Image (cartoon, rainbow, N blue to C red; front, side):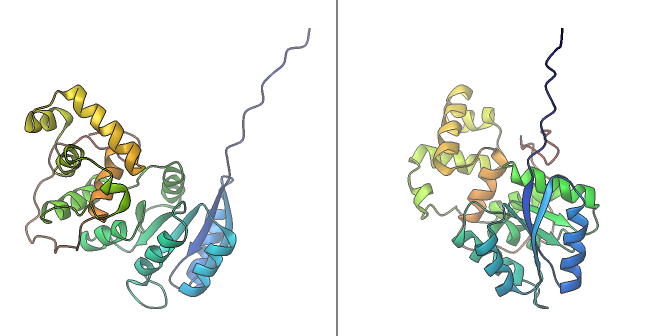
Length: 251
């Protein structure tokens, strides 16, 4: 008697657009990424206008974008901000030469969902693309610390955006506490709530803001601050926070 054997499901293919510093860099990046069976390259560009036009035309799911375009150091951040206004569903991975605090913070302020340094492997970049595509935020513990420090240096996050304005005062208090690096238990003690109530608040906040993890909530709060603050000269140690890291673990 014949048995029906279920065939393994093929992984979904991610449409990726590459935008790097020079035409050669963009082409090499695209060719390298295209070797992954889970990635379909829909364009390789080095000029901002060409990249933006291709994003409008090709509708990629993920854009791997260099912070430097057209020999302008921060041109990629400008493109990311324009892209965020065009298609909120497109996820950006920002290519950085180094994990400098100001560059990491600016990348997330510009709307990036992940930051990736060039000194890492192609295999890691593919993992980054897949993670960002699935809705996660890609950043290592040091880069998350930069974000927390930037938030701590900002007096208060601005709730002028439409989605943030829908939060109640208590929900905004919870967001601030998460951004300060407090655990659910610490938030409950700080606000006079039970840990279970804090979890319920977070579920509602995630739903209202369209985020799914504490990392994304921290990034969201950072993006809503009115202006970037300079990084402190003396780096403070990271607080004990529960944040999903890029490999899916928590700390």
